[in-house]
Length: 214
Image (cartoon, rainbow, N blue to C red):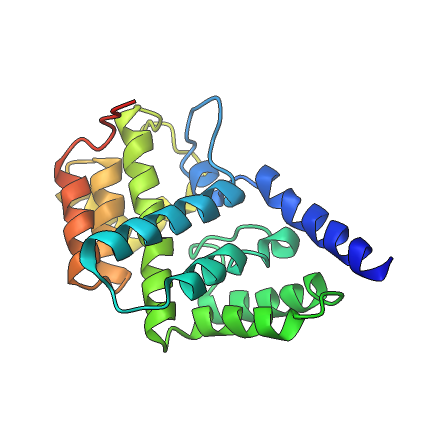
């Protein structure tokens, strides 16, 4: 019974991420009936990875990237989705790694999964760098989609700590208070995009992206 129990218990833990709303959207008071969960972000980052690999012919282990993206937010089951405006990277990683150890404690392959998370966080391998860029660009693209739906009112941002950050203030001013253009510019400046990710980000910034064919 132990293996069956481990499978179900791990699934139930991960299922919690379906109900953890991404903190950035709460921070910016996104007004929408349904706002993206962490689980949906994970899916979006994986689909973006497939598209980037397809169109730009990256020499990477795509299966490893998809596995890495599948588990890179497991810590948020315990610590929640914390934005860079709330906690620094080092502290978040320390708390996150402790949380992941607890989450994975009963899985036979826990060390392999932990190693993938450590690899993602260290950003030293080509797969980790690629996965990190997918993670960041996915958030930028989701921001653009919400902005195209007019989900954010910049005049209704009481207690938004992001507005106190110097780079956010500067970019909002430069982009004439366009929320998504500011967000995309922020990613371009601080997410270490390679040329291909930068091309996609700039395309999204300068074009309407919600042009559904279905």
